[in-house]
Each structure stands twice: as C-alpha cells, then as structure tokens.
Amino acid sequence: MNIFSFNLDFFNQLHYRFLLGVTLFGVLLAIIFKDVWLNHPLIIYLLLIIPYIFYFAVCFMTFHIVRLQKYRLWFLLLPGVVLLVLVYPVIKWYYYSFLTAHGVVLYFPWKDGDAQKLFIKIVRGLSFVLLILGLDTFFWQKKQKSVKINELQLAVKDISDNALLSGHFLFKLYQFSVEKKIVFDLTVLDFFQYIINKIAMRDSRVALDEEWAYFKQLVDICVHRKIEIKGEELVPAYIWNRSVPTLSLMTWIENAVSYSPIGKSFPIVIEWIREKDATVFTVRNRIAGRNGEKGTGRGLILVNRLFESLQKDRVNVAYRIEEEKYFVVELKFMN
Image (cartoon, rainbow, N blue to C red):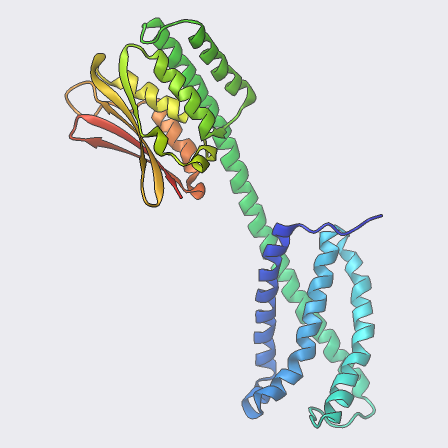
C-alpha cells in the first residue's frame, strides 16, 4: 500500500513559499480589484477575494502533492480539469446565492451569457496561479541546485584537504621519529596505524573527544619538549561531542614542536579557557629565531581550510603572534 511520506525539511521550507505565493497573488488581486478596495469597505473586498485565495491554496497543495509523489507534470492535467469542473458551481453559488442571501451584492443578477464570463474568469485565475507556481518552482529548484553544488564542493574540498593534511601529518610524525623528537616504540607504531586508518577511511571529521584522546597521546610521546596542559576540567561535557577536522589539534602540536626552540626551556602551553559564551582551546609556543616570521607551516594552512566549513557550526579559528616571541592558536567553540 502506497502512503504519503512527508519530508519535514521540505515542508518547513514549503510553508514559507506558500506565504510568499499568497502574498504575490494578493498583490495581483489588489491591482485587479483596485476600484473595489478604494471605493468600498474593506470587508467587501475581503469577501470578494476569499474564493481566489482558497482557490490558490487548493492549487498550491495539489501541485506540490503531485511533485512530492514524483508523478509526471502532465498528471496535473487531471486535477486541473477536476478543479475547473468543481469550482464553477461553487463560485456561482458563493457570489450569486450565498452573499446575496446575506445582503452582499457584488454582481448584477445572473443572466444568460454570464456562465461563459464566469468560466473565463476561473480559467484566467487558474492561469495566474499556475504562473506563480511555475515561477516558484523554477527559482526554488535553481536555488536548491546552487545549495547542493556548494555543499558538494565543500565536501570534496574537505576530503581533499583532509587527505593532504593526513599525508602531511604522517610525514612530519615520521620525521619526528627519525630526528628522535619522539620516542619510537609500540605506542608510536599504534599512533602511525591510527593516522593510516584515518587516511584509508577518509574521515574528514571526528568528535572532539576522539581527537583530544590522540592529541594527549602525541603529547606523551614528545618527550624532548616540555608540554603543559591546563584547564581540561573546565570543558563542558557537551563540547566533547562537537566535530573537528581529523588531525587538526594534533597538527597544531606538531607545528608547535617543529617551530619552537629545541629543549625544555620554553614550554608549549595547551590551555582550555571557559568564557561566558564559548569554550576556547589554545596552543602557545615560543617561536624559534629572533622574529615572528617563523612559526606557520603548511599544516596550519590545511587546517585553516578545513575549519572554514565549520563556521556555520559556530567554531572559529584564529592565529596571532604575541610580543613577537610567541605563536598562539585559538580554537573557539561558541555555546
């Protein structure tokens, strides 16, 4: 048995389109019946246009039910003919019997030849309704197509950037092991396997909780740097469920290790800060060298590109140099 399955998002958008369509149709009616609302009480004008608005609503509903069920558009001919046949006696009764019985006379008494005139008015009204529905569908499909293309482009870009970031990070991790910046043991091998798995699975995003767990593993194996973690207990539980690009936090620690002075004299500080409207993650490291021109690698560029698609999720990234000595990464999760 075939039953209607309604898409909630579709109808959340559709009722706005209905309101817009009714508004446009109402403006058109106001132009056509300008003399009525200018020279008569408002109630008279409203009684005049009620059938038109109802007719528009029925046509709008019928049109979109046909489209929702993915019938061919020629199928609209059948309900269109039915509407024309059913509307005629209803309209005649409303204007020439119902309203006149209540003391409201909008037209002269019914006479020969009025049937054809009334039918022409109904067909003309249907034409205006179909024009509005056609324009609505054309522009909406155009907009939806544009939105879907943008979403697809962002998805492809995320996958591409994530693959580049994964490869870059894997190479830097291997370089660390060769340069003995990390202790090469089974923990590091497991870490390599995690990165390789992420590349194979093409996961472009992970939960912050998962990224943070492996971030701390990377901190633990970087034994030739002093890395301090502060404020982890301040992070609300729901923040750990937020999404971040895979390897993004770990790339920041890799960048800090790569561009900070060798040894433990200048600690790399990882800090969580709780603000009124946000939870902030920061990485702060001393920049190797005498100026602030160093400290940003290719990994940061890739991470920044990945976070661009998360701005609608109220996640912001900022970089800054403090006192021309320290490079700071700031990741802000807005509440």
